[in-house]
Length: 142
Figure 1 (spheres, rainbow, N blue to C red):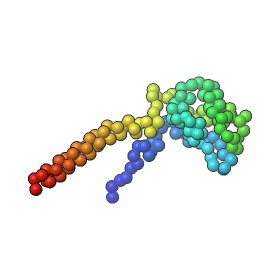
Figure 2: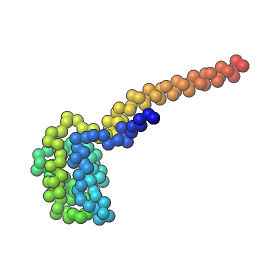
Figure 3: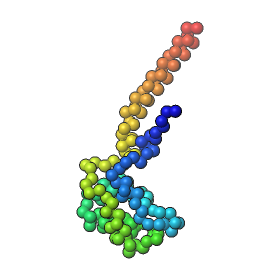
Figure 4: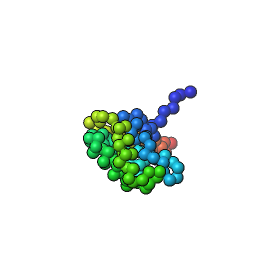
């Protein structure tokens, strides 16, 4: 049986930010654990871009920025006043030095698939044109 793998856009991949992004902020009032990834996404931020941005800041600046983001979330089993200590715990999970450019998995997969998609589209149009020419020639010739 052939091995089936997920397309890149359906895979989270391996990012140096996974330890940070999948860390728990706390428990929501519904009882579900809230991850940094979910928290950042709910705030309208790209989690990978924000993780890259935070990793380039000093620990103090990153903690302050993340604390402000956590404070903007609805409270769960934490209070707004807990935001700085939660952020301090989470910032320790960031890598010490970020690569030059970080793209979210969706950005990388879209760029990787673009040439294949264009080539595939052209092949489909060529095949369709050939089929039309074949049908027209059969109708006029036979």
